[in-house]
Each structure stands twice: as C-alpha cells, then as structure tokens.
Length: 524
Ligand code: TNX
Image 1: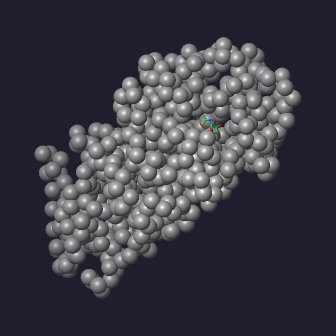
Image 2: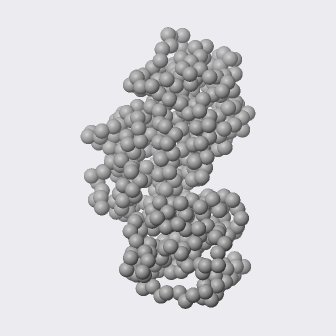
Image 3: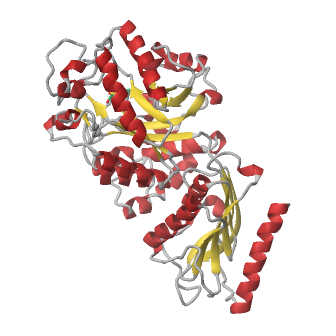
C-alpha cells in the first residue's frame, strides 16, 4: 500500500505540474492490442487496455534513484529510441518544460519482483512505468518496451509524429537464471566488432550470457601476458588455413564492458586437456601425446592432450586461469573438458580435479562440458549437457546444476536442412520447429527444473568465419532458445511463436542481420 501511495503521489505531482503548464492535447489513439504484439520471448502475462502512448519529441525518461546502473539503463533506452525513431529523449532532464508522456524507471521493493531480472511494465496514455528491483530487471523491461515501439510513426494524430505504443500491463520474469549463447572464436576468429554485434542482438531477446570458446586445436584467441607465445604462435592459425587472430586483454575487456552494459555475462572457456593443439604448438612441453606437434587447420577432434602428470602444466594453467579470472567479472570459468580422447581415463579424472582447484583458487565456479562428471568434481561445478544424457543425470545426482545444450536441439552449427549453406550435420538437421519444440524442463527424464541452471545455444565455427555466416546459422534460431530460456512452458506455443517471429524481419533488416529465411515462417 505504501508503495502504491508513493507512486500515486509522484504521478499526481507530475499531472498537476503538467496541467499548470499547458493544456494537454486530447489525442484519439487508434485501437491497439498489447496482448497480440510480437514480443519475443513471450512475457508471463500481458493485459491490453487498447489505447496508445505517444512516444514523441517531448517525451522524457526519468529514473527514480541516483543508482548509476539504473540511470545507465535510462540512457541505453534513450539511445535505442534514437536509433529506431530519430527522437532525442533526455534522461532525468532538469527542465521547466512540461513533461509530456513520461517514461519512468522505478526501483521498487515489491515482493512480486523478487526473481532477479523480473519487471512490470505499465503503459498508459500519458506515461510508461517500468517497475523493477534492480538494473538488470530494468534492462530486460526496456527490451520489451523497445519491441513495442513501432517501426513507423503515426503522423495523422497530431501535427508532429507519434510512435504509438499499445497500452496495458506486462508482468514478466525469466524461467531460467542462465540464458546463454556460445561462440567458437577458435576454429575461426571473430573480430571485437562482430562479437559486439552478436551481443547486441542477443540482449534484445533477453539473453544474459555469452560463452566464448577461446581456445581449441586450431587457435588460441586471448592474449596471456605471462605466456606470450600463445598468441605469437598459437593465434596465427584457423580452420582452412586462414591467418587467425586474437583479442588483446584490452579487446577482451572492451567486449566484457560492452556485454555488461547489456547485462550479459561473458563466460571464458579454455578447453582442456583435449582440444589443446594450439597451446602445445606454442609451448611443446604442454603436450602429453608424444606425437609430433604441428599447427592444425583441419576439423578433426580428439587428437591432442595436455600432459596431465607434469607440475609445470598445472603452473601454466594456474597462470592462465589467474589472468583470465582477473579480467572476467562473471562467476564462471569454463574448462571445456570435452572429447579428451587422447587422455587416459585416470589422467582425465586427476586433471579435472586439479583444475577445479585452480579455478576455485582464483575465485570462480568451474563449468565444463558434460564429460567432467567423470572427474571428482565438487557439487558447485556446472555441467553443460551436450550429448550424453547419463552424464547430465550423474551431475544432478552429484548436486551439480546443469546447462542444457543438447546438440540435437540446441546446436546452432547444425544445418537447418540439406540445403543449408553452412553448418554440420553430425547431430542431425535442426529446422526452426525442431529448435523450438522441446521443453528444457522435461527434456531429460529424471532431470527436474531445480537441477537446471538454464539453456545455452552453442555456435561452433568450423564452417563460418564472419558475421553474415554467423547470422545465417544463429538467426532466427536463437530466438527460439531465447523463448525456451525465458518464457514459461505454458507460454511456449509453436503456432503463436511463428506469427511473432515473422514480424522480426523488419528488425533483422534494420540491424543488417543476414538471417536464414526459414520456409516454415510466413515472413512479413
Ligand atoms: C563437438 S560439442 C564439439 C566441438 C565441435 C562440435 C561441432 C563439444 C563439446 N565438442 O569440438 O566443434 O562438436 O558441432
């Protein structure tokens, strides 16, 4: 009640203030329907009141508290509105101009907002209110609002253009705490600008994690100051014989910062003990196979391994993890751990156990592909399911949370069909309906919602090397995973999703996204 009074008081004051200044023009808004807007992911609840809010030249954004993160969200909204409409909307402007059509971001302590990232969006004719507990909720809320701003203004209601936002309420919160995408920058390198573009698109659909696969047999992609040859030598290769590339630590921090502004956490992965040819080419003492080590440009897996019984190898890992952990504000460090076919089982176990200790020593929680359950992992580690269901069940039994990335459903590098220009097909084809029609909560029998941290869609890059190729595989399928990760199972409906998806084409075109025009969608 106290809260309602506070809000009523603030709005009352604004109304009085507005009324004193100049009479408000009565606008006859067209009939709208908030409940049938093309929002992805679909919110928990949407209630339409069928009128409009006019976003226009006098609109202003106000943020309730001097919380710098929340104010930054206000500015982010203002920038995106400018990109879409050309309108310049001030944030917390100190002006005696009467505030028209206010957008108000309010930090609320309502118990209904206790799930992190949840928000409430109230759209009325003269104001929009976004209620949230913290800046991450505000950020998710403004994505919904941005999706509701039409591409075209209505120029007939007043003598200046109005972008009519449908009125009503949106009550929303995520299903899973972790909603990720993965990009393999090791098989082919992607520039900082390409990674940023992907992050920006993911954030629009409420993803909150980008896992970067930073090392593999074909390349090492992050500068490590204590081991300079990793990039002097190991970064110079990629699949197909190209010149590779790497991120300086400054580049990596730039990516992290860009992601953080979008409430996206970067999860760094150094894949080991297998997938380590590029590291061993740079520092041959790391190799445990005893075979000749040469730069690798092919796409085979499973032929490399660290020497798991050498102290110097763990010293190396310690220094690498330390540098990356210091740069990465997120809670996780991904150690890979997949397809270590050239590592003896007993050595693998020993290795994973030692490396988890190193990861913990540097203040991070270990994440690994599902094979890590063969090691003696602690219950805080996270297992990322990709292929073996029994590994996921074993992880759950051990108390580990699981990230679901089943290759048959969630691998963005699988072809859509036999005609796909890029991609692989070892896990099958994944047309858009297959990508969408599974329920993470029931996908693995015996794995319950409590065991699941969330969903991640990995994009391996053996067959792609630039943004256009990345986007062909990632769009529109990432939107399916966005919805499976955020929306309640009851709200996931293929026929309904198809209609909402068709309407994303305008956004894709505006953002210059080279999406795959799936024949299953009746594109607008
Ligand atoms: C399997 S998924 C791999 C990657 C490949 C991918 C290609 C996983 C943990 N390992 O090394 O790039 O298949 O789809």
